Length: 50
View 1 (cartoon, rainbow, N blue to C red):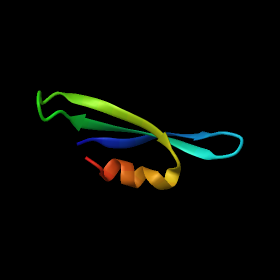
View 2 (cartoon, rainbow, N blue to C red; view 1 turned 30 degrees about the vertical axis):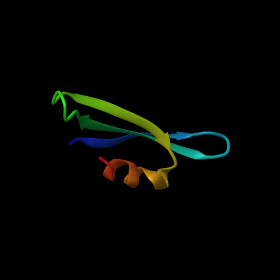
View 3 (cartoon, one colour; view 1 turned 90 degrees about the vertical axis):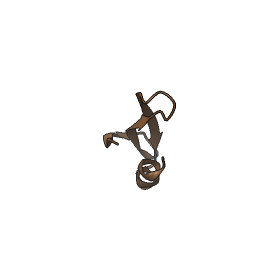
View 4 (cartoon, rainbow, N blue to C red; view 1 turned 180 degrees about the vertical axis):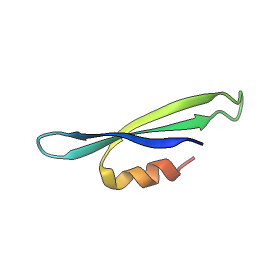
């Protein structure tokens, strides 16, 4: 499974990170990309989840 933190985004009040991971569908076997924007502290938990 490929996983990568793509960009660090900054707003006026808070730093945010956009994380993208590739997830394989158990039904078809095709890969899809799941994107999420979150605080940098939450990225590791997001990437560890299946």
